[in-house]
Image 1 (cartoon, rainbow, N blue to C red):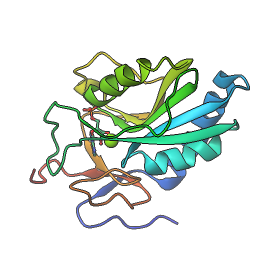
Image 2: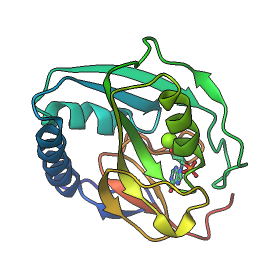
Image 3: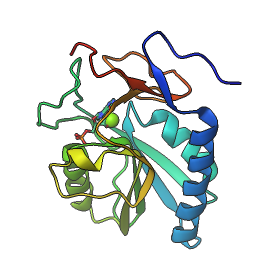
Image 4: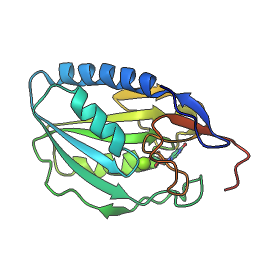
Length: 181
Ligand code: IMP
Ligand code: MG
């Protein structure tokens, strides 16, 4: 059953569309692993629901870790600087790492994290992002697995926020462009 989003928001992807796409990504990721173990690294907080659903869609021997980076705060635009707020619990040397992010936007966050993790010499490092906004890219970086590619829109729900709100919406919703920053 579809739920009604809060006033002013419009549903972009329903929970069924998200579940279907996550299942497809899970199959693809498991296939690429070829029976090897996986370490998923979620980027808090936005990727929490995506990681939880994706992990259950990947048939593999899997462990998790989480990092947190400085975010947009209350504004819809990034300041450009990325800062690590929570580091990995375990080093990723020799592991098959899958970085799990909610949105690949300018690419500043994932370019920073990729560089950081590569310093630890993982066996492989791949990136899964629920959403990709290729038109906004500043850093040259692509994800190996993309849920949905979208134009330059601001979205909330399914983990993603506007000033910490709306993360719990089960759908991915569009924020109207006239919304104050
Ligand atoms: P990047 O460093 O510019 O690629 O930004 C990535 C981060 O910005 C994402 O992990 C999100 O937390 C945040 N972000 C980018 N676009 C949106 C959006 O449309 N809604 C909510 N958060 C966003
Ligand atoms: Mg994020």
